[in-house]
Image 1 (cartoon, helix red, strand yellow):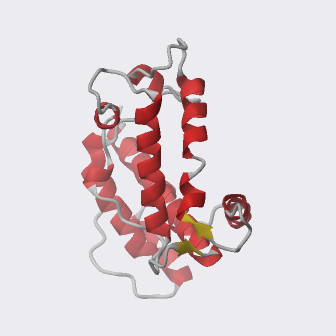
Image 2 (cartoon, rainbow, N blue to C red):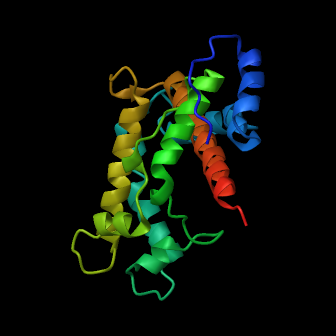
Image 3 (cartoon, rainbow, N blue to C red):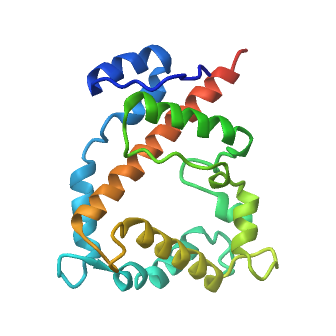
Length: 210
């Protein structure tokens, strides 16, 4: 993958043109605003703001976890034994999760280049540690080390995720998430996911020489 040597300190439109000549089309798509993203975020904020006070508290983020964990277990528990195997956890609507650990360093470098080329500060450059195998994720959740994830373990994972997400959104650390903070987080999350997705496609395409 071509390395971007110097920062493109020019207008956004010009940087888009320059980036197109350096990065492939799939990477450049990373900075295109998602369709309907703002309205979806507004709707999501309104849904989370249960008491309608205009801000989201930590409790509003964490209270639904138990119900969502139970729903996920029921949906994924193919043999209805109230336990999830790694195969059941991996199963998704469009197939199993892709293992990105082997190209994690390339993804991080590519996302960094996309952020620099597009001057899109909403993109967060991930770390290599953000890319874990399904086995590593399962082992981390399976605190009893019995080879299964039960409802309590699933709740713990989802609760930790909700707490981490709240901390990431609460940029002024006042214990409340405003609509502006929420929208900024959603924009950053979407931009980052699109950048990663474009980079993964680039790397996989470059490896596909036959």
